[in-house]
Length: 248
Ligand code: PGA
Image (cartoon, rainbow, N blue to C red):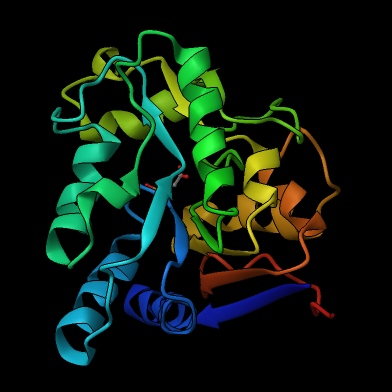
C-alpha cells in the first residue's frame, strides 16, 4: 500500500515520521531502523531527540543501518555521513554507538565490506523501518537513475547532478567525492516499512514521477510503488504535482 501524508511544515513532517517510528520502537525493543542523511530528515531527528528527552523514548536497544557513505571520507571527516549521524542523532540520544552502522568509506575491500553490511542486516532479521529522502533526480540513497531495481549494497558512481546538489556542503564541487557505497534498491525494498520524506518545491517533480510515473530504472524511487507498506510524508509544495488518490 502507498500512503501519502501531506503536511504544512517541515516540523510537522518530522512529527508525523517520528510518531510512526516511535510507535514501532515502543512495540519492538530491538527495533531496526534504516536511516538517511541530507537536509530533509533533520526535523525527524530533532523530533526523535525531543521524544527521548520529554517522553522517555528509549534508544538503548535500537539498531540502525544508514543507507550510504562517500568513498574516501573518514568517519571523522565533517562531511562524512557517519559524522552527520553522530551529530544529528546518535550523540543526542541514548543509543549504543556500537549498534549504529554506516558503510565505511575507507574500507579497503569495498566488495567484501558491502557483502558484510548486507549480512549484518540479515543477522538482525532485516530492517523494520527504512527512512528515505529523495533526490531531485529521483534517487534513493545513492541509487542514481540507471541503478538496477534489484541492486544490493555496492560501490556506485555519483551523477554530475548529485555532485552539484551536494557541493553546497563542500568548499567546491571538486571536493565532493565521486563515488559512494550505497544500499541497493533491492536492499531497501526488503525493509518491512518505508517512510519517504520530501519537503521542498524542488522535489515535486521527483515525487510525482516516483508516485505516479511508471516503475522505471530512470526514477529509482518509482520502485517503491512495488513495496507493500510505503508512506510518503510530504510538505504541500513537495506534493504539489500529485493528482491521484492513493488507495489500498
Ligand atoms: P536532501 O537530499 O535531503 O539534502 O535534499 C535528499 C537526497 O538526495 O536523497
